[in-house]
Image (cartoon, rainbow, N blue to C red):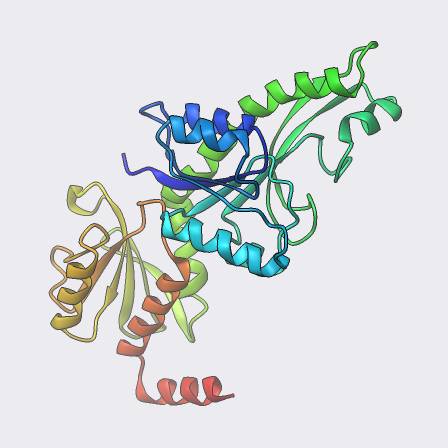
Length: 316
């Protein structure tokens, strides 16, 4: 199994990080932890991660501007090969640039049933409000605090004699269960054929005069009443993979791509050497790159008049 690579950011003991780490030890877990990083070099969670054989990084944020510190953390995550980020008790507000760089690929766990009680002191606020339940939520991180789309929640009953500490301890058990399960489901979606096809459609059908039909049982994208510039394949001729087929400028480009990343690029059967296959089921697809490849393929088949109009539009 090709596992999605996840970097985890912590600030302290990292109990939620530990829950993710131990869940990842299962053979059928769809993700692996490739880095645990903290804004405190003495964070106890770093010692645990290191003992479990996970790469770690710790640096204090003190004396650094937020954007500068986030650039350091971003560089460490990318150097480790992380494709997703999981915030696990990371007590730093993130810069807009950092959030944008991990858009739709960064999750957080929050100790309340969002949208209730964003921010701090969630357990005491729930008790003071007389709520019967609190809980925890896993959500996609956006620029607004605790405001991204919620992916999963677990309610936790508030007992008559609960205080903030007892309620927090019991909610933490729910957090450990919820986070690993939700993260696994989230990274797995990038291997689901329907989700992948919809992502391809977003870019392909945004191109001028593009349409979609079925050709040889495959979704196929072309210019209306013209040539085809992309195919979406799912177990094509029993190859067991999900991929996008796009045109190349020359056989040399096909060979260069396959040589540079043989796990991702391949020569599709029955399509000749002016096409290349790009695997979409590896869990780390760069969708900006896919959009660029689709655009380049579209330009290979577009009539000169349409190309001219496109060039004029891009100039402005």
